[in-house]
Amino acid sequence: MDVPSQVLKIAEDIKSMKVRGAGRIAREAARALIIFSEQSEDKDVSGFMKKLDYVARLLINTRPTAVSLPNAIRYVLSRAYKTLECTSDVEKLREVVVYSARKFISDSLVAVERIGDIGSKLVKDGMTILTHCHSTAVISILKHAWFSGKRFNVICTETRPKFQGRITARILSGFGIPTTLIVDGATRYFMHDVDVIFVGADAIASNGALVNKIGTSMIALAAREARKPFFVAAETYKFAPETLSGKLIKVEERPENEVLPKREIEKMKGVSIRNPAFDLTPPQYITAIITERGVIPPQAAVSILVEFLGWSLEQFSKF
Ligand code: RI2
Image 1 (cartoon, rainbow, N blue to C red):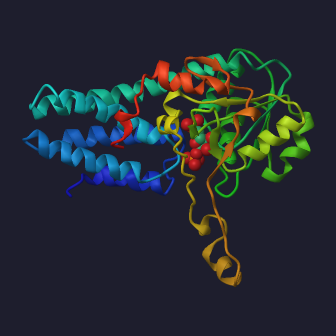
Image 2: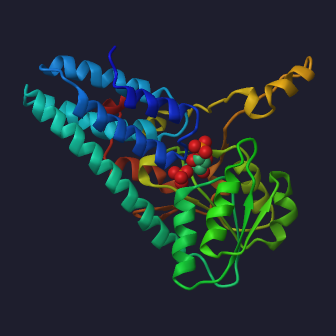
Image 3: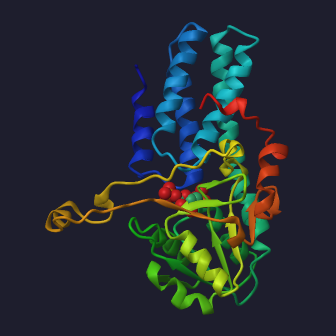
């Protein structure tokens, strides 16, 4: 199928993690739908919708875990399908796709800001805060807290194998926040110095379980042992509607050369390498989830899905 090269590039960048972070990949996917709609030359709705479905699937298949990505697509496509019920005007459909995708992007950015504002209230002067990987939502919390005058320091785990913790450390120290980078395995060693943990989310299941960067569940375990609060920062579009029916969130397993360069792998005859990108933290290890709608206990995840988002399962059977 004929897909605009800019759309293919976005899909490739998400797959290779050139563009990464659960929120950012969702916004990029929405941007790809805008590009597709603006460049498509289809004159009839069925041709347009067929291609839109194809592009949606192409984008969804780039990374399987972060539910923000299919949720962004669902947000746009559900509006397109609704419009299709009352029009056969392809221009109208194009408009709806572009408008909805732009709305998703701007609402998403507002949500990250709101989380920053709400979450910053949990930060107190003198705290040592630990974070894992690179989460825009967590950075937003720390940024709001710092620029509202609170003084604290942050420990960042480096986050093997792709070292996103280095990005976090650079950003935070760029704000002037005292920042320490540690290897992932040193988390428990430093836990007695830590007052609070903030992590991002790739997906939240309806029972409140968190799927986030590999290593998150070990941090939660160490936090629980040391009785330190463990907060998750997650926009509501990271809640996974399909888990309402018991479906499990698929954990992405990435290439082995992210763990070791190819030439080193060749020297490791007989050794297999596994590289799961995410793990699951059960709800009982989570103090609360900070969303743009407020701070909720993990057990309230189901009401975010059903009451606030009003998402029905039928709506999601297609994607
Ligand atoms: P924001 C990242 O995944 C990390 O797991 C991070 O915690 C999560 O996305 C949320 O990120 P990856 O793309 O949306 O690095 O808060 O695999 O930026």
